[in-house]
Length: 108
Ligand code: FES
Image 1: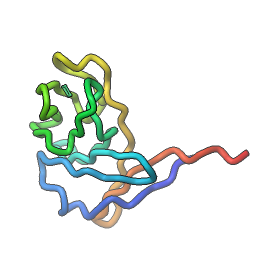
Image 2: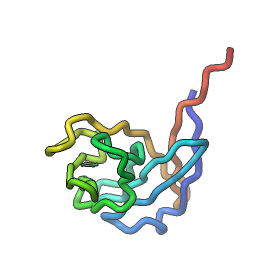
Image 3: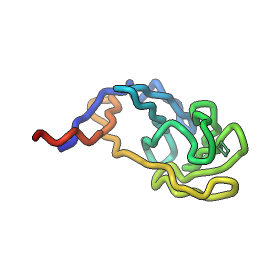
Image 4: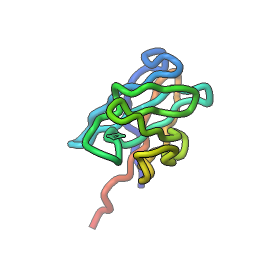
C-alpha cells in the first residue's frame, strides 16, 4: 500500500529547483525539472550531505559538497565520487498540489 503525502503547491518549487521535505523521521528532496516533479531521499549517498542546497540542472541534481551528480528521475548516480544510486519515490500532481507517494507499513 502507498499513501500520498501533501508536500506543497506546484508553484512553490521553481523549475530547476529543489525543496526539502521532512516527514515522519525521514527527509526527502522534491525536484521540479523540465520533465516534471520527482522525489528522492534527502541525503547524498556519498556522505551525510543533504541535497536541499544542491544545484538542479535539467534533470540532474549536483551535490553541494563534492559535486557528485544524480539523475533525479531514476536516482542513477552519474559522476564521481557518487557511485550508489539515490532512492527515488513517485510523485503525483493533483489540482496544482504536489504529493509524495510513500509505502505504508504492512498491517499485521
Ligand atoms: S557528499 Fe555528495 S558528493 Fe560527496
